[in-house]
Length: 569
Image 1 (tube, rainbow, N blue to C red):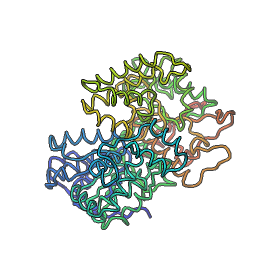
Image 2: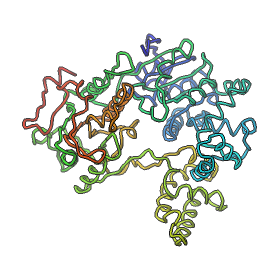
Image 3: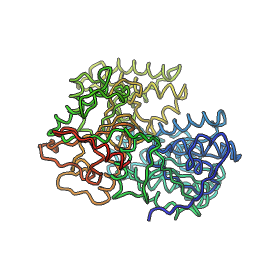
Image 4: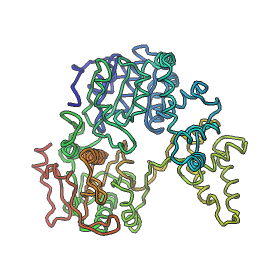
């Protein structure tokens, strides 16, 4: 069994910091020291609970902020954590160390460069550096590392492997870091991989003040090496670990939560999985389900439904054509379309464009992977430009655009001038955040700063993969392509094993729980995949959801079984 509850009772803590938390959030935020695992289902206030715990320890239990280390997986999550701590703690929040695993590794290496066999001014290899070393070394990893070292470079992966090797060989250094960061907080603990786990075990003793928060039913990154097993064995790794579960969901309506909990049940890693709706609206719409005849029909359903939801002064009730007096005002930015693979986006983009519905695609791309970004970073390093970083990025972009505009003898411009101009736009937000600190800017680029491609203020429908949707929420969600072969994903001649199917089910669960008010699930009877059109069946993940939770569109007689719905809720 994955979990045994280890924390009973609800502590009432009469402090202003905890007044706006619910009972179990308060238990988690005010738990005493020692290992603590918080199982936080989707929409249950994970970041809120984590930041209030740090703030409570510092403000009420006299923990020194400089003894707190909070680790996240993305730079965006680190910035959000930092922003919220600033609001709760004020200026002393600056003393809390907040960063990604890679940023933590970089800090340890900078502070111990000679011991790690590195020069003090080592830098992180960019794509061109790595490609050159790999071309010379082939598959010989030792030679590859040696070639980088010769040029005072480290590979991105070494930001974690080198600190782990260093700490494993130096118990005194381990003691120093344990003394420095007596309180460690890890966000999204279900996503840790073997090296990150090793680093955490070195930094936190078995009885240490390690607080891990996450949800094993949202573990969807095994392809990156993440292993949900570390979450499930927390109580074996850490002495007398406490467990707190957050089940109260503040995001989604009751029908959406009922469908999501039923969908995950066959492979849930949380015993007695519950998501209790904080919002009790007996009129909440059921989950829409549309059986499309084709991909084009599915896209047309999207266009019609979005037009109904957003168009006009009032909104027609989709099941009857009557005016829906309860409809609230929705804009395009309230709507997201989620899919399993990026290749599903094109027909949807085309259909929305034909209907003049604005679209923005969200990616999880790293900035450094975009054309022109590496060239600008190199120009900044070598050109000796002055002024703020944002101004230097613009100037470097102008220099490069002019340089690449001149045709080369072999006709191959290294980077297209338009790519450079796009790269300037992408880099400017990061440059502004870094002020005039070039080394910080380059380190953030190298350690995987993401493209800020999603503008929450943009008046557009958001399109994104299920993986990219993790952590986001929208009033209206369309989950398209809910077909066997896409969910679970199946490649020609291959059948996914039980673990792979379980992870695909978790991905489906993540998709369903992005929706706040309205959720539509659609599947096509025919779809072109791997070069040929074939017949498709709906995903088996839908089979375990009570049919009474669905409102079916496209049937000759649309059904909305109100009495059944109320009984279920």
